[in-house]
Image 1 (cartoon, one colour):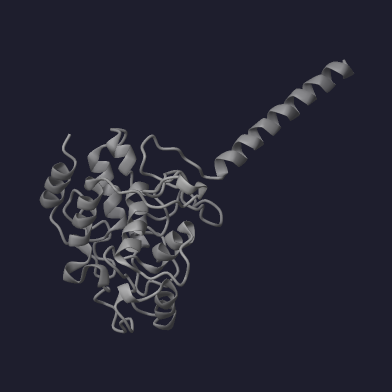
Image 2 (image 1 turned 180 degrees about the vertical axis):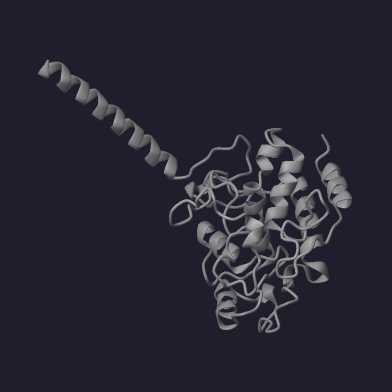
Length: 263
């Protein structure tokens, strides 16, 4: 009997080790995508415990003024919608994790143009949120990431959404950290596009193209990141919070998505 119990204990211990090993590999966050555009690294895991099931809905805490208040970091791309998603339009040439960017498909450019039409207005890559009473000292495209962070830190109590895709501070810092962008890097149009590529993939771009996600679900996910895009009611996902409202009608958003992604 003692021998049988010892063998049973050994089997249980072995199974437990297998489970722990599998969990450790999964936690590294690598995800392969079957096309030649996306980098195979998942979004950086967020620190701290997972949110409780009874946590408030994102629209109840997102976009609060100022954007540095507790709870303001929960929406608009500050937390990845899909931490297991591949990230960027990059290849593996040269052996580096962040190899040179490949040319994104035309549908991505058209989608980013649509997002920018709701977010940036005529200023495009040099856009700054209209509610920022203390503007940056230079055009955003002339600033480094370090200079943008200094502007954010020295002008509390106001919104700081910046660039063509109106990155809020928490989103900008998450993406920059995840992609290994240096503080001295300039906030160029190319860098802004690079950061936005990750957001649209986290929203479900590849899954949508593979018919694994309905178009309206993808559109909803995009609206959770960009407040200027409407949900099916025609309102912003963050309607009424910090003055947010949709800049496009649902009919226009829906028609453009059908045009961009013709089946």
